[in-house]
Image (cartoon, rainbow, N blue to C red; front, side, top):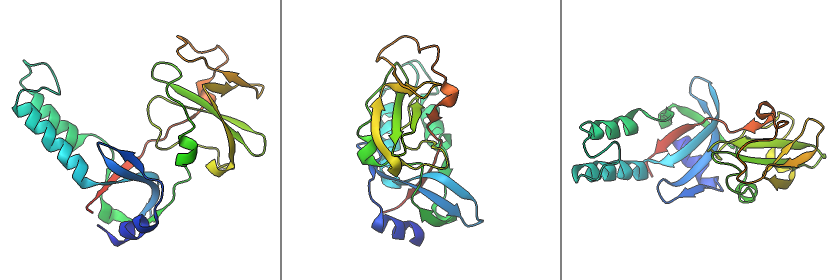
Length: 202
């Protein structure tokens, strides 16, 4: 593990915990060439390696994960998935690690309820200055865009399954509704952000 990651993890709080991936730490980093990456997830390498080995063993025993039982390239698909998918970052390329302003604190994240409609979670965060902002995601809760003049410490209330209308009103998105209201403009919604994963050895 690089010293900068080790030093950050000594003081890091609020990991996102998963039975599959273990504890993951959201942060921002500067690379050795000065490149700034605002959304990075630090994860131990051991859980993902263990998962890959488990998938390989399942395939050997005929428990297909990719494709049907007649698929001849299932093993190749598993290797391709673990080797080529995801945004990866070498830990030795990181020069500095910081807290990410795009990571919603867990205390706030825990107040956001599940899917509003199939494949979509919509919610509103009310700020201490009275402004309300629409947020939404198709699947990722790790990082979110937020206007430059705000941060998640400004949030005073969460309104689940809601959106902000063009007039600034908080309106409901009914759970399970088959279509969104006509006035629900997803272009005005703060969406989830893509991120890089950096694996480290404990």
